[in-house]
Image 1 (cartoon, rainbow, N blue to C red):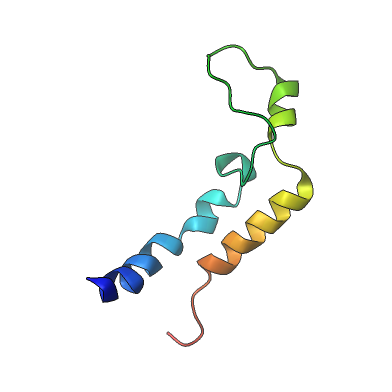
Image 2 (image 1 turned 120 degrees about the vertical axis):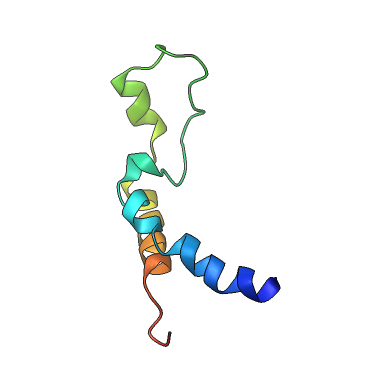
Length: 74
């Protein structure tokens, strides 16, 4: 079970992360404010204040991209 969890299952879960998370609103790596708790209480400005800045986004997306690449020695 440990061997399966550490190899094929890990590869199956990680291989498609960048496809979904490559667009930052799908997978923000951090939030600057807490998410809204009630519907209809947000505006465009509160959404922009909640999403992370460019540097954090680039770091998170590059990490996701590296984890999604196939290994060269598979």
